[in-house]
Image (cartoon, rainbow, N blue to C red):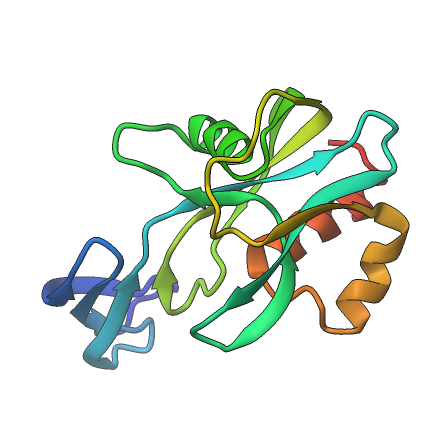
Length: 182
């Protein structure tokens, strides 16, 4: 029987593999056409990250870092995995302080998105921090080299392939497209 509403129906789902970093499942689904088959599902823990703009509104705080899985170097926003019982806001604030030593003067939600909506369950929460106060030394030492990068250089960094991380791309492009407004 075809689904006239356009919704994919999940009849059942079973786990294939589970760890704290990834869960893989197999779902018995029906497409709107009525075709029925098994499809993999993948869950990753949701992260929160921050587009932190300096007091002058001219620079964004980013890390130049290596990612081993794709074996690439790129510029990324500070952020990390949301801990159990923690809100995305709390994670964004905690990660900023741990990774950079900076606390934002203001912090608000910018955008939440799914990086591979057809394949993964992995909501990314991006926040906008305006202004920065140095409150201490960074306590996480494996997060790359943080620098204040001029916002005017971001389009070229993207064109040159020096920003590959989906959360960083979406957050920065969202900020730039809105002209720094939220």
